[in-house]
Length: 509
Length: 69
Image 1 (cartoon, rainbow over the protein chains, first blue to last red):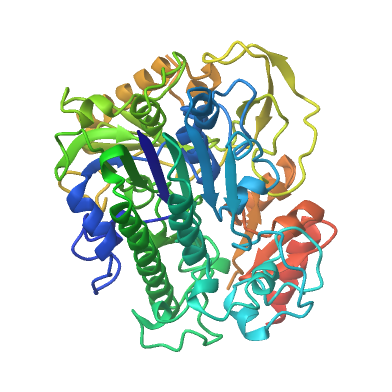
Image 2 (cartoon, each protein chain N blue to C red):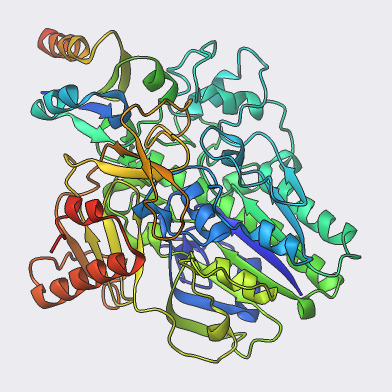
């Protein structure tokens, strides 16, 4: 058996035909013929939720089965983690990572690629520290990268957006862009690795993450604007669309949506080549194929652009998941049961007949896929470390705020920066150490980080009748709110969340 | 009209955070200016990044500019 695991970063599920006739924020159809073709063949999960957010925390859920956000933020693989590639290669399965996700190679997130038998890294996404020329990047491109124009290109500080202008300076055709290079690496890898009996190939596409930089024909596919117009940004700052550095005009917001849509279609076309390769090599009968995303991206929904800053609405948290398994009787069906990102870890291990570690937070979807059960989980927790803690029972979502004045403890074998993830790590002089984790006997550091209020009051939505979460029922539907708060408290207790988490959330008994 | 002032949580000590809250500044978990954030105090005032030796000085500067308008 093989597993092909495809992650398409920031992919809003409402941009996929399999999930929605039209995206919530645009009035046009977005072409996703190949993802829709796969959806018709696979099981489509309708109630799938992210867990730990954003990018790297999700990857730790997928690769180690750890729902980390109650204990730590964006950070490295821990020494006690049993990663998928570690367990699979021990079991005789070849492991491969194909990615342009440069966060794997940045400050603060080591350990994610080293366990693979092989990895391919397509360079240059976002602020990947790659090209250092031209010293004076193209002015028109700089103007389109909000923030780049106001930062001197000579600046050698971290995360200078001019890096992206340098990285793409020599791009000429669609084949130079990232998704085409990532997915062509996948088809090439499938072609050249046919002699291996069992493999796990993790395809981690940074697209459709911003910058929303599209080549033609995708750049003009959903807009009449000139995509090279310097007044039209392709890389917004996160925040409110009506104020501050993230403020956008309607014209700019419409353009950003069109470039996001263009990226979705570009990735879809590339994914189609992978489907064709699976056809040509007759791999469907021996390969489980998983397609999912880490989170969505707010494109003016609820007045926000981006992620991280505001409430974790379903646009961000309710992610696409489609799974093909040759032995499953549920192929071609919709799966309404509640599932969570962390569950994919045990599912991959199950598919490749590897024992699932006892300490994991992951619950295999295999019984669901094989039609052996109709019930999977009663709750799913999701959120960012140091902010709100959110829960769903599949019918309601309950977003519980924190007190921003109460610090959040961080637990790790490393001294990570709780918030400034992309800069050199600074020592934590107030740290103490001990066996603090319920899922490992390893000693870890414990130190405090600042909490951030994504919202200041509870939010409750009935996502059966209000999938766009327009009506906050908190304070009105008091019985339901109390029930969901109990579900949240019980779920945190079941995971053995730190006592200080209950205190900072005002949930201590 | 008061300027829109934004600050990054990683860029402020607790006393500065309190002060910025008092004047109605908007807090963000990250303003995506990590290089400057790592190096020195900064604020974003009406969408424009201002960096300097301390936040109070930056606030005073934005206040003076508003009064001069």
